[in-house]
Length: 157
Image (cartoon, rainbow, N blue to C red):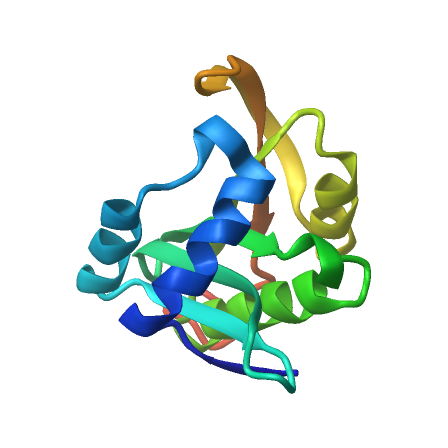
């Protein structure tokens, strides 16, 4: 598996993953095009056969905060570390940007994703009622605050 920048030609492989995982709540092609046009940080995980295994993205205004836009892994590639690798890439990019706070929303019934995020220091900070439509599923908002590096303007060691 390798990570590479998410480009327009990946959209055709991402849409079936999106449909399978999120059904009626899937992102449209236009939403992906908009994310790419906005210059948000996106990566795809590509298998040895060249197929997209998963994808993930960040958006926001560093250094204050960024949002994990999505992390999704094809069903037949789940539980093989693909999501973990994608999340680690997003964390590394946030660190490169000096981001202090990362936030995300995850469906309240997605315990596996919540456990993964908690492993990497994300903590629940709130709930968005009826966030996912049309299912009206609540979203748990989770946040990860970066450790101070000691080299900022307000750090007085």
